[in-house]
Length: 80
Image 1: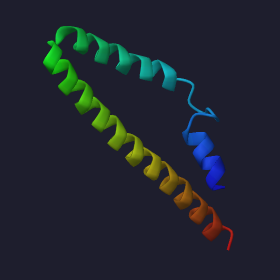
Image 2: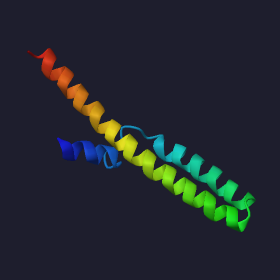
Image 3: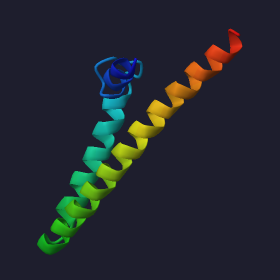
């Protein structure tokens, strides 16, 4: 089951077809900001965004897994 959850989270199973569009919107906004910033500011912004993405990715992944585990627990309890 752990594998299926990871596959779903990693986008190999796609229940949400709007995700690529939303991701593109974020990428466009990031690129626009990078065009407007000065060179030194660009590096700082890229570092900041990289850290946010890394933290957010791990947080979302763990919450995603916990949500599935909670759902399975609820189903298991309801079948008793």
